Image 1 (cartoon, rainbow, N blue to C red):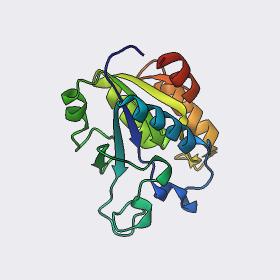
Image 2: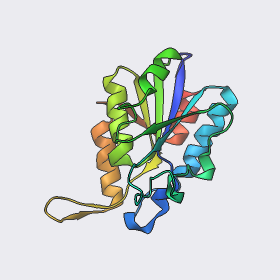
Image 3: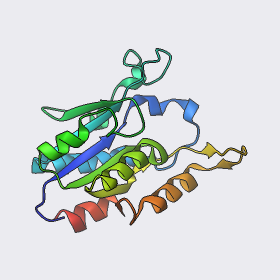
Image 4: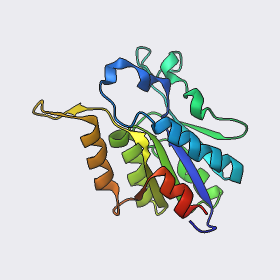
Length: 186
């Protein structure tokens, strides 16, 4: 990455995703990789934006009164880091995210968080469609296993890899944490 202004968008790294209801998950080190990227971003003084999913349903894990709403300690916002609350899969819909990026003259966006096929994918697609040079960090996101409309189960790794393949070179450039840090940021 050159000297164009860049932002790190951390999507939905919330305690709700520790709940057993989600089932099998891949990439159990995603939060550690996000933390590694976050540390570098903070050292460089680059813009960090935390996305926090919010539900109006009191029984939802993502309701503000429930423990699951909290951002995980490993990537907890500090100082003046921005927290954007969203209610749908896209971090851009119903929020000020696009305006915030434009106001800070951001042209490059790095995305990490949970989960790959849902909020991370939707945010990545919109970022690319809105014209931001978008990078998705493959080992700084994770997926859960899912059943399709015919009740066929797909394991978490398959869901994750297919989601990344669909996004790569169409909406974003998919990189690993090490590729981002060693090849793109130096």
